[in-house]
Length: 207
Image (cartoon, rainbow, N blue to C red):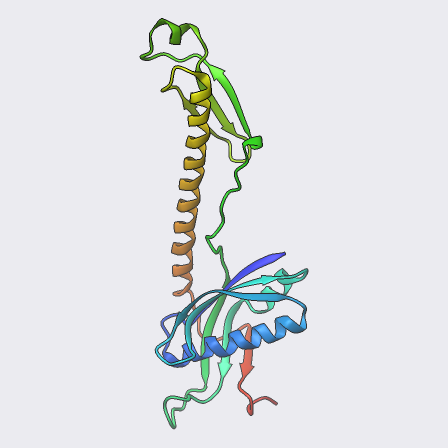
């Protein structure tokens, strides 16, 4: 089972980017103990070295969904600011939300395609009107249907139809990927400070 989780500092100060880095490390350590594999798919660096405005994680394991749920919502990193001496604030908020990574590619196999010969009108003369030389191809998993009829031979139209299907699926995947990026960008503004689902303290503050 695989879950993708986005941790974001939102529009918070640089301490929130520090909190993203610290919380990501804590999450990864906890995941290892739970026998869940983590992978950083995408990171956006903060202005300070070693900090992140956001981190996109892939969690893989038998209980990845349940584990991700314990890290979903508003997270609070409790620690004094390492950048502003004497600053009174010690709670730094981060949002963590499941998300679509947008990297899916629809698998394509010709065995998943039904191709039938059909008649079609248009240029090509009497032979084209009498013979079924056009090719209609249906990609069963997606339901996409295309018709190729530019050639006078069915085998050539069949080849073109397969090529057209591949191109249609690739465009659909690109649209899905763009939509996923847009959805992730909205999550950066979804941070609600206060009432965190999890509070994690820096070393020395725990207990």
